[in-house]
Length: 250
Image (cartoon, rainbow, N blue to C red):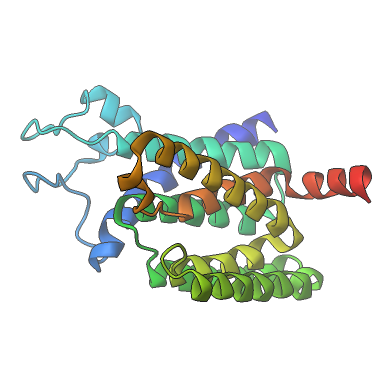
């Protein structure tokens, strides 16, 4: 298991490097395949040794090897965060076929959280690909669980749609569609995911308003980062949280 966790962490860092490309190019409607990675300042194409997750950024001291321009710390942080997340999923949930659902779900939540935090946007192509892949992977991994997960997806989509219609300034259609995708991947574990998302979002929102005054009250917070937090918590401990609730309150 230690070897599997280490391998998952390295693999996650590599995926994180790819997610930096996705987070930059998809909102701009650019290809994520070509051209290759390049410095956004001078356009110099990155060599393989300049593109090793986290290590290259440290070796270059956060600067382009060509023009010396600063490279944002978001790149190594995204790579490191994805690697740690993948390693944690394998360590907690085990090395089995369910990873075909769990790791892609984690990657989608991470990249959408980054995009929404930076641009207040939830790109449809990512959500659509995640939904289609989720259906196929779930049917292949555990066909018997498909009805539960479809019901969770439908319930989440309808609930968020009603929220969006009632309070359009606070909830967008991107959040609605993503909630449905989360239900597809998480099933009943969607319940603790949404509890964590709304609780963390409320606490952060109150803190921001208390600090910023009236001006901050008029600004909405991107909600996908909180959905991502809830989704990752549910991925790691969703069934256990549901069991704990049943034991304590039912």
